[in-house]
Length: 325
Ligand code: F6P
Image 1: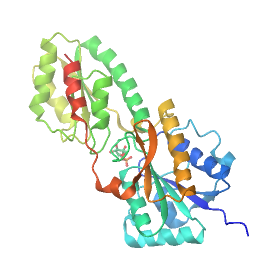
Image 2 (image 1 turned 90 degrees about the vertical axis):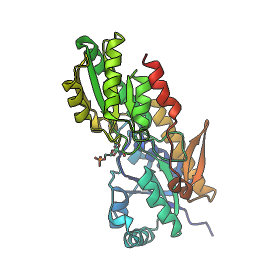
Image 3 (image 1 turned 135 degrees about the vertical axis):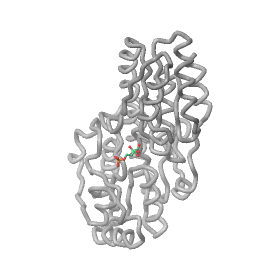
Image 4 (image 1 turned 180 degrees about the vertical axis):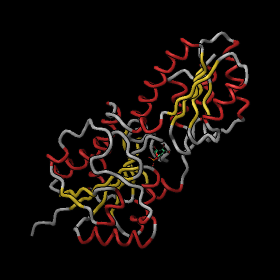
């Protein structure tokens, strides 16, 4: 008697991130190469609840490696957070013959994956989020592309800022994480970064701007993470009211940071993690997330992922100040 082929479901959940498509492609093609079936779950956990399933063949993931967003679409499902929603989702999975699920998404998505795992579902998580706030991996899929998008935008803003001797306030995404803002501070030569993990008074921003002017700088870039606790509009108004030398302008980068073709780094990371996730299921491992540690992609338990909080490395924060001299 031949053994029944395993059927894998794959979904993307939460905020989309560039590289999610590369990961979907890697999951589908690795599974097919190992004689497994793949069902794409549309629209994240919401689609799992509703039974929005679509069989995936090799051609269904053709031409998506380089595309931003997610071809499976995504959602933030409130219903799935409830035990009844999770039970409905498991029932739909069983009805469709899905034996295991691969979830590509951020912190909240890993929470959902862990909840399913606790109820006996074979789940593998793949970290995908521009915020890079997920514990257990050096970097998540999408973060590198977002950083490149920010870098490109700030480089352009610096051109006009220095032509007009202006201080520019640039707001980055990241929710409760300052990772994007802090790294952008280094790669874009910011005067100061404002991050949720290290709150400062509004006055300190004024001091930094004035100090940059006194040191003869032609511009000052301040990068404000959206969760820093200080509003970009308030900061801009404050700098305008005070006579600090520089006049000011502000730019909120917003969802531009989430889109675009994934970088080479993100395509590679997503492909490696997609392959590794399927390999985990083949060897009987589940209840884990793929994580980049050192140079290799390894597994971390989903329970550890959701119970630990990722910390920012304050060395980078201080580096911003030193390099801004
Ligand atoms: O988690 C990704 C992220 O882009 C955050 O940086 C941001 O706070 C949030 O999603 C925005 O969510 P939405 O797309 O629902 O507005």
